[in-house]
Length: 380
Image 1 (tube, rainbow, N blue to C red):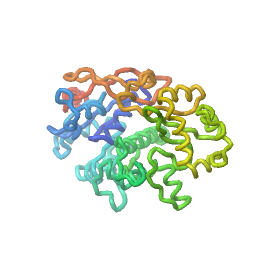
Image 2 (cartoon, rainbow, N blue to C red):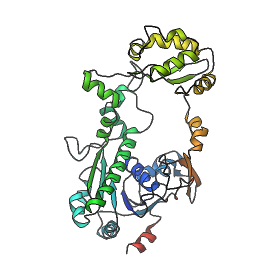
Image 3 (cartoon, rainbow, N blue to C red):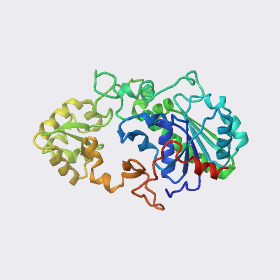
Image 4 (cartoon, rainbow, N blue to C red):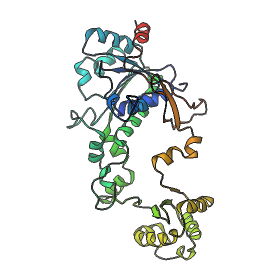
């Protein structure tokens, strides 16, 4: 891929999701990514379903455009190969349990002495410091410990996981952000640096309204379904055939909404004429709105509200979301090639940059150790 990170070499020691998601972003932005995998086994996610012609769609969705070489970093001959690659690398990304790479001679202290310009990024469950640093963590563990599951779902429901692996994905995003900031810093200082990203830290960082409520008011937020805790109307409402999301985030939008629904008297109603009052009387407001919304299908209401620029929308399933013309227009479903599977469709890059073309194809998907001969020849 052509992009702002072109000519930068990333050594990818990651597996499963948090690290591969980060290096996929770097690849989409133009970096060359050499994925170093365990011999015979490879990235654990190569064994994760769903499968297409016996190949993991999970793995393929995260590792397009990367090169693969299998190396055992406990083996002296493989370490020599790894050192030659690392000597020319700009960035190293790893998501091993803290302390693992130190045992193999590739901790930050050792590597930074040999390669002072290297940017070394580590993404782990709990980070490199603190009492939990040596414990493993999966996405749902940090969703739970980070408070996210406590505010997800409906009142009195069982603990509910967010429907995507947001613990891994946010850590992957923050790691990519940190790497790009470190690249800018290196331009000024000529030195690399160590980046320590904790999945748990990232969950705390994205709690926004929930953490603000607790730290400012000592309130412990609870699940509210689709409802927003401090804006109303701002939730899913039942219509004649399904549900509609309405997000009227200010008084002007609320007034427009009342007009569309044919209840202009609600604008001056003393129970609802400010956002604070609407939040205090959310249940009553919802009942009145749903009584009016029940007369038409969601698509009809969306059409009427969009004309007045009222933020709204249907609740799509994954098929509907992927096939949305807006998603297609934004090139958010792209193709990558695998030599057995053929063209494989996957999610695109949401970062659109005026200086670089956002192509509808991505680099090929690598088999385990596929690029060994090429890499050995180049880094001999």
